[in-house]
Image (cartoon, rainbow, N blue to C red; front, top):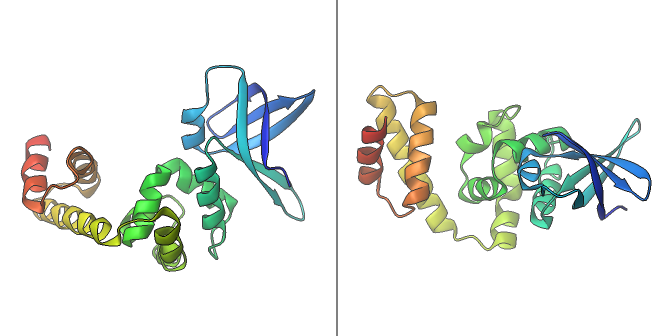
Amino acid sequence: MIAHIQGKLVEKTPTEVVIDCNGVGYHVNISLHTFSLLPNSDFVKLYTHLQIKEDAHALFGFMEKSERELFRLLLSVSGIGAGIARTMLSSLDPKQIIQAIGSGDVGTIQSIKGIGGKTAQRVILDLKEKVLKIYDLDEISASQHNINREESLSALEVLGYVRKNAEKVVDKIIKENPQATTEIIIKQALKNL
């Protein structure tokens, strides 16, 4: 019903904004990803999703159309409401979520607050084919990247390193060198941990 809102940014917090459109202030829920993309100027345009429930009408706003489309895909999964979908988009970059779904990475999806093992599996089961088709991902490279990451993390855990700390270092290494083998990832991680 409301595809986008543009106007003066009156209030701004990491979770919501108020946009003045010709004297009417619209309260719009946003993700941290959208918050990070908000311009410094007063004028803003957000793509929106209107959720109508018995007890409330809520607007969710996104700087990018692609983030809104991912939000809608997440809502299509049983057990994922607007709140959890927004938390997912606040916890991870949309590209990371797409990559995790495309490569079947349950661990990454499950690392988001409020997502258990079953829900993470359902997200991947319901959306993997759609995500691969829509975003034209190369499933093989995505899963190979995931295998190297998981093997590296397992090895570092065996060596006594805390998984959370190791994940940060390993993800940074993979981001800098996506073609890194498990051996290279482990060697570089040991230098940085």
